[in-house]
Length: 83
Image (cartoon, rainbow, N blue to C red):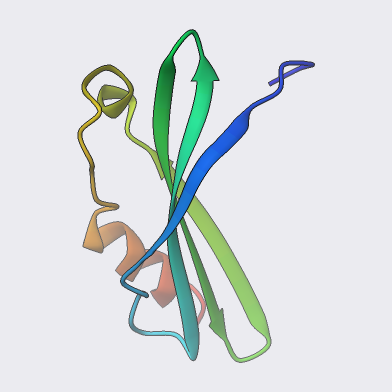
């Protein structure tokens, strides 16, 4: 953010979302400094000629290191908006 730099320590794929023609989901383990990491989830879906992406960050995972899921209802609602 701003002039601060972030380093992605690891990227792993997770289950692709259903409902689009193609989909991809990844988890980013981001080094946020001071020996702390944060998990971010990014979902990309293509339906026809439209590509949509959305992400989620688990703020509590920064403190605990616990994994989290993007709620299925959020994914389904976003994909439904693609028509």
